[in-house]
Every structure is written in structure tokens, then in C-alpha cells.
Amino acid sequence: MGVTLVIIGAIAAGAFGIWSLRPIPSYSSEGVEAGSPFGVTFRIENTNAWFPLSNLRIRCVMTHGGAPEMPSVEASDLRFPGGTSDLEPGQSATFKCPFHALPGSASGDELGVALRSEIYFRSEYDLPVVRSFRVPNNKGPFILNTRFLPPRWTGKRTGD
Image (cartoon, rainbow, N blue to C red; front, side, top):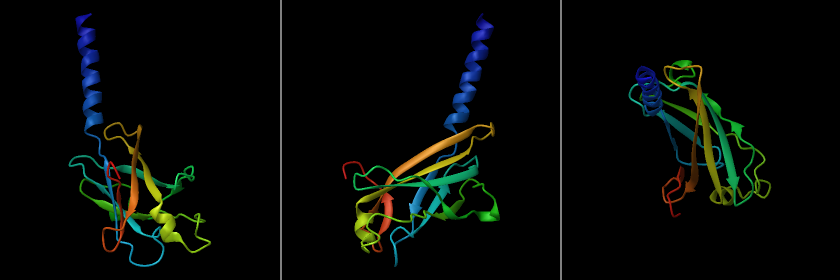
């Protein structure tokens, strides 16, 4: 009985250790220089020192001014270093969120729409060591921050 409990405890500790060391992506955006505030390039970085983000997939989600969230869209122009779908520790990749047919785009008020919108990123990648298990990661909300020049999408602070 005692040996069984030790084995179960070791398996649980190993699983917890693998889970707590998993890589978690970090997101940022380039500045909105010209054109649509939704046409900006985003950056994803693997901040983990040991494990890669393997077989990475990113989806973008936008909510607009209290309206229900729009369907998620696959990130476009995803550019990994080395041409693979993996991000090694410390590496970063760039992508865009192809939001089409936005509310307000017909009236030409994309900036107004962007100021009332939030963007979320839903990524999925293989768990290190146990590659057959996919890890979901949801980050957001990101808002268009006009305190920066040029404006950029930043994480929304608590209380904003």
C-alpha cells in the first residue's frame, strides 16, 4: 500500500513539474503607423528558458463594444525563424490578425471601432516532453493604447 502511494505521488509530482515548466507565450504589437489599426503586426515570444513552443497555432478573437465576440480567425502572415512552426526558447515570431468586414468599416470609422474593441489570442502548442498533448493558452484582452506614439495594442490593465 505504501509503495503504491509513493508511486502515485511521484507520478503526480512529475506531471505537476512538467505542467509548471511549460512555455507560456508573451504577446506585443508594433505601432500603428498608417492604415487600419487592425492591420498591425503582432509578435509572439517564447519566454521559457528551456522548452520550445512546438507546433504552434494562433487564432485571433475580437470583441467590439459589448457586442458578442466575433468568430475567431486563424492568424495570417505567421513568420517563424527557421521556417518551422516551433519557437525555441527566447525566439519570437510575427503574425497578423486578418479581421475583415468589421463593424463600422463601411463608414470608414475603423479607428473608432478599434478604440471600442478588444483582441484576444488563443494559441495552442504541444506540451514539452508529452508531445501528444496540446496545451491551450488564452491571452487578452489587448486594447488600442493611444498613450503611445504611434499607438499600439497593449494588455489591458486592471481597472481600465
